[in-house]
Length: 362
Image (cartoon, rainbow, N blue to C red):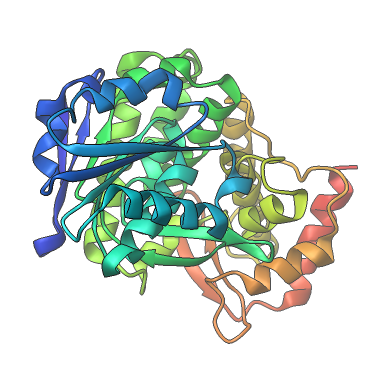
C-alpha cells in the first residue's frame, strides 16, 4: 500500500494506492467524520464493488444511489437526484458523500457535495484508470451542459482518495487504454524521463502488469498532487495539466458525449496541440511524431473522428472555461516535457490546424 499526501493546510488529504483497499474499511473509515453516508455509484460499478463498501458502513446511517453509466449522465438532472437522496437520508453538514466509480461519478458527486449545505465531505473511490490518475485528485468537480463539458463546477477537495488497483482487472479494455492517455500526459508536459519509461514499459502496461501499473499510477498521482499544492485554483501551473484538453473537450462535445471517451479525446487533443506547436515554430515536429508513436503503440487514437467540422470544433473551444474574454488560451509545448500556456494565438492558425487534421481523418 502506497500513501501520498496532498498538503493543502486544513484541506490536506491522503491518497491510498493498493490492491484490495476498498475491502479494508480501516483504511478509509477515518475519513468519515459524521454518521450519515451516501454512496454514489453507477450501474456498471455498483454490482461489482458496492456491497464491499456498504459492508464497512453497517454502524452508520447510510444509503446508496446508482446512476446510469456514461458521460452523458453527468447532468444537473442527476445532481438533483443526489440532493434528493441526501435529503431522504437526513444528511446534515457532517455527512459524507462517497463516490464509487469513474470520473463522471467523481465529478458529479463532488459537485453535489460542494453544494449540499454549502459543502460537505466527500471521499473519492475511483475505479477507472483515468479517474485514478487524474480526476480523483485535485478537487475539480463539475457537470456538463449541451454547450460544453464541465462548464459548471466548483473546487472542492476530497477528504481522501482510495485507489484500489484491483478494480482495474474488471475495466473494459477501451476504458483502460483511455486512462493511459492521462498517464502519458504527465510525461508529455513535464517529465521526458517518465515518457521514456512509459515507452520502455508499453507492453507491460498493455498487459496490465501490476508492478508497472502501480508505478505509473503512483507517479501520476504524485505529479498531480505536487501541481495542485502549488496552484490549487489553476491560476498558473495547474493549467498545464490541460494539455490536449481544450481540443479534447470540443471533440467529446461535438461527437456526442459517450461516442469518444475522454481519454481518447485527450490523446487526439495532445497530438493536435503538438502539431499546432510545431506549425507555430514552438517545437520540433519530431517530438509530435514521438508522442504520436507512443500513443499509437498503446492503441490510442491520434486522429480526429471522421465527420467533425473544424469550425464547429473551434467554436466550442472558444467557449471552453480556459478561455479569457472570448480569447483562447491553449496549452502548447516547446517539445517533450516543456508545456506552456499560450495566449494570443490567432484563430485562423488554430482553424487551419483543425482543418488539416479533419482532412487527414477522411
